[in-house]
Image (cartoon, rainbow, N blue to C red):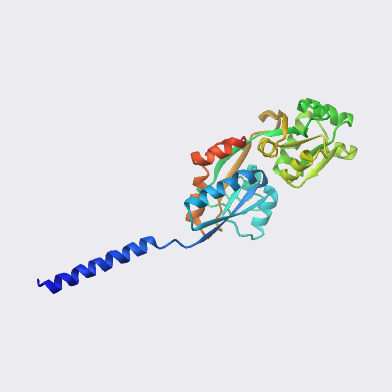
Length: 275
């Protein structure tokens, strides 16, 4: 083999290696990942957005925070969504074809099978404004105050998970919601953030919200509901089968189960589950 031919081969190899390096350095296609999440996750997921995007510079996470019922309705009406995180199994079940038919009466099929997990557990808390003007110490005090007409309570609407948990607490204590509403001792919020705001602004004497929202708002929690009172507060999460970015959506959901994410969730009172 002559020297010219050897030089040609070397040049060709160098060119090929250079092209390979250039291809390796080519940035990935940009992805806009749309995540629908319960309003009670606003602070934690906003913090985690920066962490995830720092490690995935081609990904931009776009959040839609609202009540789980509202998000579920938006999804079934055709909204673009890659990942859904609900504040209760009810709204996820209504979109999951594998759920019991009694929980998915419309036969909706939006959950990408094999991706659904129970991500977090929360607590249903009785929170009071600064200074606790009415001296409320427990759910028992709340019940007495509602019956006497001495307290004004803020709670979520019936289509909002935190409102549904509150209704279970009413049932546990034998309270009639309609009767209480007729007495004017209840006000409502369309999501947990609205209820939290009413408590923060002392527009009410107390509110039933999540422990994590009370923490984020700097509110005092005077009592926490037991599982016997309202059931376990589980946040399911899943990739949706309408996603256009399945690999990224799966990776993001996996990221939410990492130790880094756990630290953020635990800091405000969530309990990671990862089941």
